[in-house]
Length: 231
Length: 400
Image (cartoon, rainbow over all chains, first blue to last red; front, side):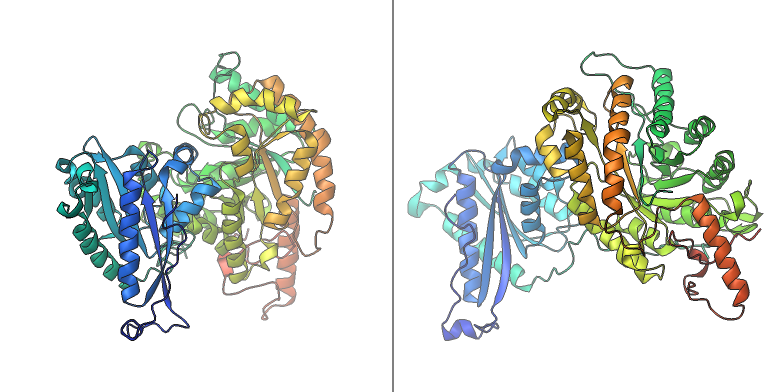
């Protein structure tokens, strides 16, 4: 569980970075939630999630944007997620994770591919989110699997879920097969991570999601006496 | 009557007893509910509230029939619902049914409105669950008028138009039953309750209290916004859920199989986890007293506390024992604790008598200050507003 938890990179100090907008006294801070649905420990899913988060933090830093990263391992929440499905409400621990995701400026979501699709645990977590809570949220999707033949699952299974939720999914998703971890200079994984992080960081920088995820907010135009004839 | 009303609410589930594997017949369950309601009065509780469902395993599809029987068998018990489906019922029929029950019960009637929760029930009654909120809002707007205006012209989205319609009988003494709006998660319903100055009931049993605290806070703020009084004068009801034995470990051991198999939360979190996350309290009477006395600290001074006591297949004998403990040992202490430090401006639980008195006082004020606006009136909220437990009436539109 080392790596990106709670890590806040140093604010960049070079002149090139300083012109990017924020002042050092009041730097822009963006919150990024990282959800990893890997089941083993250590998990290659978490490894990929960390790489994507690190690359994103670096890209954001280049534009003078500070990033707060919250990493969530669904394995630690598996029982709470099931309980939420049965009872309709989250445990305090799960609520914290849900708040981190719905209150973020960007989400990195990485799942292992099981039987040509996202893992059941990953989908169960998505299922306990308020369906409105990801609207306009930039999302970087990633997946891991045994062979690269599964890589299209990113686009036919995972991307549609977030599209349905009105999230903004970065064009590049990153799939890491077993062979990517040992291929050294042969692997294009670092390039793919770099491109995905660049696209995602650009979306996060421009994202404004204030108030979008408040479940206690009345819908626009709500009238307590209804539309017709009540008066 | 009591500052705070204590009572029980039931959903009327027919559930197998997990320790004996026996399931009561519908007739047994219905008779048991009627017995439980009478026991509630016998042990000194104030309220009995009955749910409405149209799908098994729940049996009460016709609450006013059952409440009418209970009205005849009791003398002080306040009869209520938890909840009446404002979405799939015709508001005209609700207006008539509950005005009739109000006469039968000599005023001991109020009702809690809710939307209901399962998708299939809506189409069975010709409705669409996706319009649940709109149905709740429009249907109540009509119900509110039917009880306050003798002749109603109406046109809405969901119901046949009405021309010069008069629902019958008219509410007892010209004062409609008090209405609570129940909600688990919808800010729209809190807003609706606040707009009318009606009560807000948070079931408070299946979710963490923090969630309901936000919802009730929202209701209180909007109650004040609409000019019905201060936020801490809003009318709040809470649910709760307890199981008690003299020794707390006995309570846990006895209740656990019912908890583990219960349709609503069985096979999910453990009894211990669920008790920590929600107001469910399984233990000694003193533990229940401590937990529920603290509800004031979380929610502010409130008007009604109901307990769920008879679900999950608990046998009748056990439920009656629980009521004896509740009425004998718990509620008397809670009454004292709740009275302590309760500010004078916080209204008591509304009753027919207090609402009639308030209506009369207000109409006298109105007569004597004709032409002026009395201080208890808020002309901006006019017909939508109504009686508060603290004694001010605002425009009871149903002149007789």
